[in-house]
Length: 201
Image (cartoon, rainbow, N blue to C red; front, side):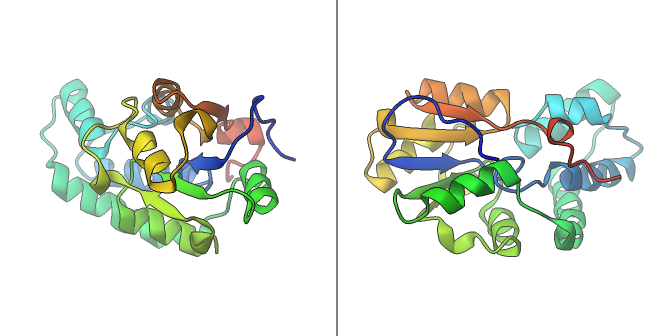
């Protein structure tokens, strides 16, 4: 089943990766939970999803502040990413988004616009067999202002040579939707895993 598109003539599709193209958020949560748990930090699942779209340093800083901890950002991030990579064989695509990719590929250009590191995003898309579907990748290393700032989406539109008003964004977080709106782009909200019935047991 495809998610409905907003009205308009769209000449480019921009996709967030985690939780949008890749049904990776349950796996990311498991990696996060173990990584911070090794520092005696609990990270409730509802908080993890509420903080969706925040950068890794911002999440670790938030956990440190609320838990009275001093977890080192680089060390926790490296451990979290290593744990996620080990879970990659379990990764699947979000069916409702995959349907759009299969339907529109070759007709309009695609970009991935992610807050994740390029290596991690590439690994996820490669695992799904979708890496070659995207004409452009805009990842954390490519911009300075994270979502909800529109910088990343505007970079993607410029890179594809498509005006923002002719782009449609697929996003799963409030921050991502806010960034798309600020960029002057239409958007499609991707439901969270529990609304799609795909949360692993």
